[in-house]
Length: 91
Image (tube, rainbow, N blue to C red; front, side):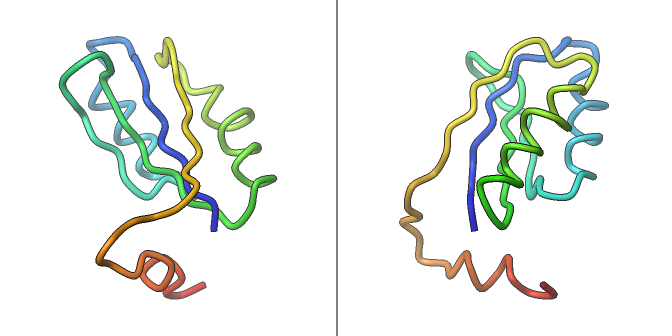
């Protein structure tokens, strides 16, 4: 599984609509509205790098109202939770 954190600046009046749009997409596990330098943070979880590339550069790049993004790929999870097991349910 490949995980990425997507930081976004979006049109202010569309924060909620964009968050709901993103949250409904396959591969987007969570979307948060946040304080600070960014408006939204999305956690992306997909099977492999090719799927991540497609999701970020083809699908999410076309969402109207996203003004700027920064994508960070996760190398390793440090958690008390078994994330692989949680996200593989029903796969």
